[in-house]
Image: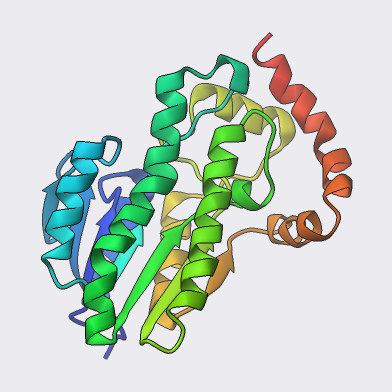
Length: 251
């Protein structure tokens, strides 16, 4: 029997390119999947229409999840801005941090009391390699995803021994609608690796099933994550040419 058999799993962003694949694979593994998105999530057993970018929307979905019994929460929904920080609109800056960092924290807060009471549960936060290797022109996205990694590590230490576990997964770039034409141009100019959503979803579901604590998807990106933590100036120099190519797209 699969370790996910009959598990009640909530997936945010379940109508998206990666989310729909994750939801479908979780269902195949026997899980009961509820999708949270702004549109219906056909790959899930049921859908909850929610706006993760507003205080009102977050309060509503948090109340709904707090009243439900959730075995696993997968925080996958995200938005991305690519461009100079000086040109990012205040609305885009605000929504980026809310959707990518505040929303996951709020939803964790909603489901955590029930998990602790049952002494069973898993929080799965989908971050990004860009959170561990902050990229120029992805400043707000990189910093929000870095915050999500910090949230995951701190929470893992906080709930140790309670029966609740925490997984953080950092994919590299993925070919989804989140990648704008300029992101695709940047990828082409720099030779940036981009994975297929199906392959990334398979790695995510496998990590959830096995109880992996931390996973970085992609090589050499996984190596650069460790290198950036130990010697960030080396990574600065290694990425300098790519940073110039990114800047050229906005001239």
